[in-house]
Length: 83
Image (cartoon, rainbow, N blue to C red; front, side, top):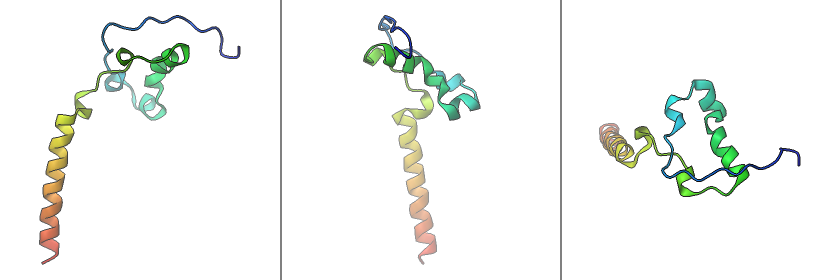
């Protein structure tokens, strides 16, 4: 086998903390912060608890607020510049 012998990796009881929050700029642009998840996925099928928790930046509540604000700003700008 080219990549070596597959290892038995247990399924965690709870989803792990997302390493994206602590990753360096280089890790973020190369996705190397996900290497542990790739290794687990190579050795066995991924389960729900293998996937990282969302950081607050990517949670739906925060994105909804930004979406509403941007939508309001866009509608105001359209009204201003179409008069």
